[in-house]
Image 1 (cartoon, rainbow, N blue to C red):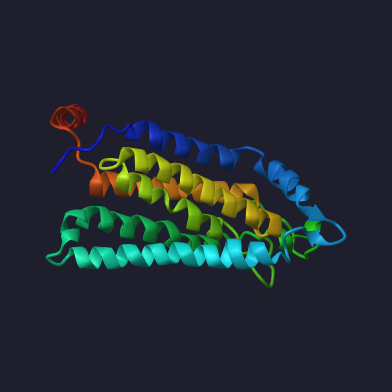
Image 2: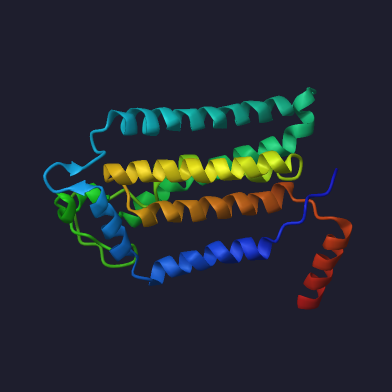
Length: 241
């Protein structure tokens, strides 16, 4: 099996983890509210709340397209278990199924645990619910929020898995997949922000979660270090122990 191209796992795991820590301790709500007000009209509500394009095309149809891609990955992986030409792609396809599945599956449990309200539900934006920070006190309400992290953004950012699946075999295509996943996730994020469904930080958290999931799955499933790199890693582990 060919070796993987070198990758700085330490750097690309510490950076997102650092951003996560900053999001927890900086005054993020001020920026969230300022950006939300750009999309909010006190007379008519959020400018994209009733947009057919944002709801039907950019939300529903786009999500269905990503789900279809995930189904194709599952079908491809099942076929790769048989004596077919896809056998040589069994591991990358298995990685895609795992990374895509985890990236989207964590959203619903996190929404239920955190109970963060959507902007459109808050009193400041025409709703009735009080604002509560992610880690702060959440007053009792009849309808707990289900808006953190951004669910629709995960449909786009989960495609970061394509970058890792392709980087060792097709590096140029992998870079295009990386740009495409970031662009699509950002587009989905802005669309939902215009509808009042999420704050910016909700979607940034989604990006960070999906990146870490795709990165860890890549390290465990696909990454094959060159002999010299493997020897260095092994020596470091021995010295630490």
